Image (tube, rainbow over all chains, first blue to last red; front, side, top):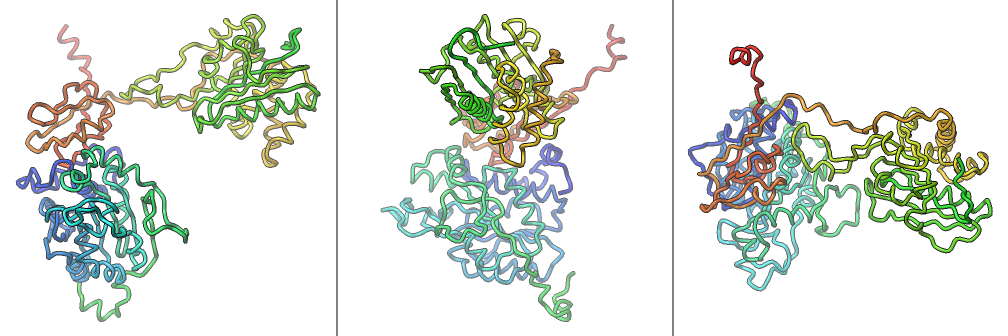
Length: 281
Length: 301
C-alpha cells in the first residue's frame, strides 16, 4: 500500500476513474454492486495501478455491466466465459493487472467449468465474484447461491436446493488466494481486494452483494439498508482454517482471507522457450 | 484508619469496569476473611460487563452476615478501580465514616464520545480528585494504573488498590500475601506481591493528584477542518442507504427522492455515506479552515 489510509480516503475520488458520460449507471437503486466497484477502484488507487495497466474482463449479468463504467481496458465477453478470456489475456500480457468481474450465475452456473480450471491453472489474475443470490438482469431466476426457501421467478414455491459455497469450491480447485467480504464493509473489502490484486496467482474474492429490487422485493427482505445490515449480521470475520468439520455452508459465513497457498503461478511451470513464445515479461 | 466501626458487619464495595479485576479483589478479600474465621458473603455482577462495562462486587463479613448485598449508604469502604465508576457509587458509601479509595485512571466509554467532531472533549466526570475527596469522610485517590505500569504490568492496578485497602482492614500483611499468592496464576505472583506492597507503602506518602489520569488522551486535533458534502443529484436514485446509515442522521431524501443535507453542521466527516453510496453520488471533501492572517486583521482594523 503506497498511500496512508486516511489520505487515500480523502484523495480518492471514484469519478476520476469512471467513464462519466455513461453516468448515472444502470444499476437499480441500492444495488451493492456499486459499493463493490468502489472498493475495486479504491484498491487500484491505493496501489498506484494505472488505468492503462488494468484490464477488466466482465461476463454477462448486472455485474458484467460494471466494466462499461471503468475508464480502463475493458472487455465484455460471452456468458460465463470471462475467466477463459482473461486466462488468454493474462498469458499474453503478463504486464497487465487482469481483473475479472463476474457474478454467481455467470461464474458458478454457466461458467462453473471455467472457474474450477482457472483455479487449477493458477494464472495470475483477480476474480471478483459478486454474489447477489439471483440472476438479476434476466428477471430473477434461481442461481446456485440462492438460499434455501427463497422465492425466485423459477422457484415460486421456494428454493429447495443446497447452496454453493464458492469459496470452498475455489479453494479445493486450487485457487491460491480466496477471500470473502460483504459490500457494506467498503474499507475492509478494499483491503481484501488490494491483497488479491497484489497476490501472484489466481485470487478469488466472493463479494456478498444485495439485489434489492428483484430478490429482496420478492422475498420481503426490506430495503437496501436492511439487506446490507442483515448480510453483515450473517457473516463473521473468520477463516475455515484447519477446521475439518465445517458444514456445507456455515452460518455465520466466514469473511476475510479464507485461504492462501504458496503455489507457483502458471507461467513459472512453463519451460523458458515456451515463456518466450508467449511473450511479455 | 480503621473501618471496623463498632458494628458486627463490615461492608466493602469494589467497583470498576470489565477486565480490571474487580472480581479478583473481592474474591481475595472474601477468602481472607473466611480464613480469619469470619462469616463472609460475597456477591458480584459482571455478566453483562465483557470488557468495558460496569462491574461491582459486594463483600460483607462479620460474626453473622445475613444478606449478601450492602444496604445503600452503609458501605464502609468503596474501592473504585476506575475514576468515573467511583463517582457513580459514591452514594453507597457511609457518609459519616466511609473510606473512599479510587484509582484516578480513566477509561472513557464510547458513549461518552457521542460528539464525534474534531477536537471535542468526551463527556466524562469533570470533578478533580481534590473536590471529591473533600466530600467524603476519608478518601484516597492515586494513580494505581501508573504505579502498576511502572512495576511492569498495568493489569496489576487492582492489586495496588487492594494493598491500599488492606491498610484500612487491619489483617496481618502475611495473611494477605498468602491469599494473593494462592489466588493469582503462578506466573504473575511476583508482580502482584510487588503491587500489593507498593499499595501499602503508598498510604504513608499519600498525596492527592491534580487531575484524573486519562489512559488515552484525545489526540491533538491539528488544524481545523470543515466537512463539505458534495452531492450529485442527477446520479442519486434515492435508495435511502446513506440516510439510514448516517450516524448523525444529518441526511434526508427530498420530495424528488434525492438526498439532501439539511443539517450540514452535524456532519462529522465519517465518510460512511460516501462509501456506501452505490451510485457514487456523494463525495466528502474535508476543507482546511484558513485562519485570517494577522496582517489582514490589522488591515481591517
